[in-house]
Every structure is written in C-alpha cells, then in structure tokens.
Length: 145
Image 1 (cartoon, helix red, strand yellow):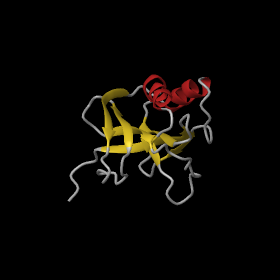
Image 2 (image 1 turned 180 degrees about the horizontal axis):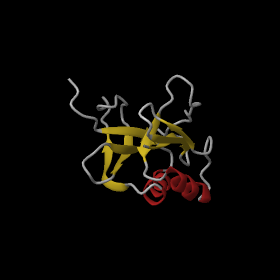
Image 3 (image 1 turned 90 degrees about the vertical axis):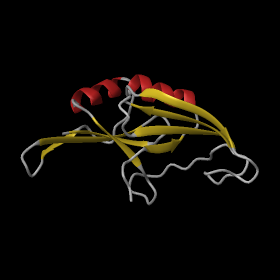
C-alpha cells in the first residue's frame, strides 16, 4: 500500500520567522510555496473558506519534505502539548556532528531538553540524540548515527 514517505506538516503562526529558523538555522531549502483558498464547501483539509500559505522545505534531494502551513483564515489557536502527551509529534533530523549542531543552535538561543546523550547500539556503533523546540514550540529531534 505505502510506497514512500512524502512530507510532514506543521501549522505555524509566523511563517516568516519559521522560514528563517528552518532555512538559516537548520539549513533547509525552500522547495515550493503555495497560497490556497478553500471554497465554502472546504477542500482536502476540510475547513470551509480556509485561506493558508503552504511552504515545502527540504534538502533538495527529492527526499522527505517538511511543510510549514500558516492559516490566514481561520487564524490558528494555541495547541502545543508536552512531548509525552497524546497527539504530540516531532520531526527528527539526522546530523553528522550532534555536538556541533547542539553548540551552534544553543549559541543562537535555542533551548534543548538535555545536552546531547550518547550511547552504543547493540551492534557497537555510537548513537546520539537530543530534543529541542523550534521558535513556536514544535518538537524537533537530532540523531547522530
């Protein structure tokens, strides 16, 4: 049935600030941007009359993309939940140097749940992980394998 993963979406309040964070701080590239307006019957998102801007980000390799969605109408309400709450989501990125990624972002004011934590896999490989939030409180994770 499923042949591949395509994208993950995050609803955001300030698209410009979030684009700055995801492109300048995390290094993703804007791939596509759309402005959409649903008719009174709604569209695929099921919200009648919705107006939104959707921006797709990625690495430019035709791989999994991240979609940032700003609803202009109706304006989004708060909805963030703790990492262990039902419905909580996160996006995980692979990094080649977890310590450097952590240091770079911490130097830009990003707050992390912990410092990077390293362990050995059952195969004896080094593995590291750290969780943090983007400027609007969406959960993100870095893994180094």
